[in-house]
Length: 475
Image (cartoon, rainbow, N blue to C red):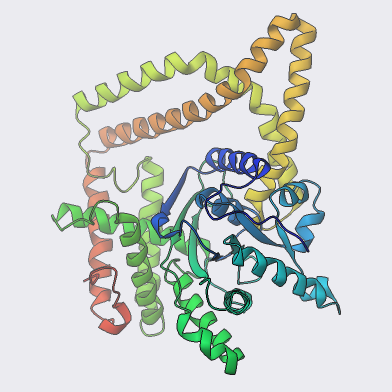
């Protein structure tokens, strides 16, 4: 099987760059925030195997392609190449099909060709993307890794005669609200390369032992860059607890993370709390269940009032409120005409995309992929119909205005709606606090109680459970 082999410093073919540009636009539209930590750890040259956890069948690869500046050869499940919308872009970017046992049947040559093509690309200094779990996982846990990444690394070293050391680069992705348009966020953490040099020589005499050792190291490296929880809802509650902890730490005047390290600090803190939670759940399940219930109540109270944890404690003085209202009212008023045009022009494709995805009945981790794939067809199709109708009603002038404004008006509509939502939530919070003068104090007391309970529970956890090299003790 022949594949394109990007040179170490190139950005890929014209088709690859075009598709990567489209990917970045789609991700920017869909996600509220994409945060990348450790981008400087990506080697600028040489063969690289990017090994990441796998939440979503297509979006995961899109995120890595958008993050890594070098051209990537993606190892993708073979059935994706038969998808009418996904297959053509995969072929254009030079992706290589991976045949699982169900697809390969009794023909092992299919995956032998895949390994040979991937090793050839790595020896030429290319970048390979692989998801070693072998399948997607909708819950925030890491499945047992398969040995493909380790075999690629060792096979490349053997093929190159040890003169072209390949880098095995672990990447962890943590998603929040993954299937919701403009609410989903993701943190991508690039880790330090997995050490493999000491096992290259051992691979000649004890190949399976070397493969298992590298797979174990890779498992530990990816697990160190994600937060494993029993389900996505638990991960959302953990984020609420983390924000409460940070706000109380700031109120007490504790040292904040150094600039640029807050994301890694938050990741390490959440990992420590989850380890402590698993330890205590087996010993004091009632206290852990009670803390979870209190977090749910606190989150519900914040949602009801319309504020976030970090907004709690801010002064709602008359001058501050008036300044906020005037500034945002002016911005919303100036953007109103174009935003309304954008909302009207995109209402039908937005609604129809949601209805089609809902009827597909796919799993949660596939929802973002389906919305992007369906949207790529529905939006241009309905834009064409809308443009035709305007042309029939208003002539070429109306059509030209529509074509010029359809994209910028849609982008402005997104920003306008988000700001309007923030203003409404802030106004609701202000009126809540005016109507109930004691509400602000009660919410602060509730937050302090949560953090106090967390501190008390931490006292029951042995230091070796909480120990982490990346963050100070939670106590």
